[in-house]
Image: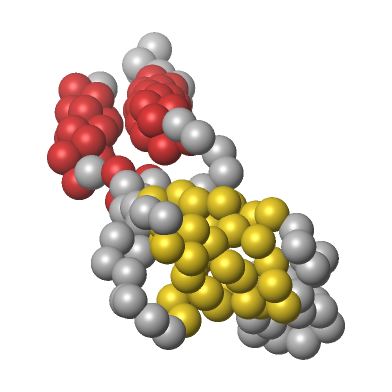
Length: 139
């Protein structure tokens, strides 16, 4: 019983030390979220559709390519803008994360599920070892 419990504690400790990337949570921010306006929409019937958007950062208007489709002309979308913007030319932008605070709750929930899985596996091993048939004493 002590070996499965120690193995479960070791798995949880290693998962905690590995960081958020182990549970599929990335802390990477792609830049600052900015409201942009779609200037050239793209239909969704083609793969790798790209729309053109314009946005304003620090009082200066920039044009960017947005990896999205299905928006209407003049529609507002939230995009992540890189920290370093060129003075001229187009900028490649990504969709902004629209679930604020989602990464804060996913790591503890993932670790809680991992602890439950380790506990369940340990209990299964305990029950299997406990219920094995034992030889009967000779009469």
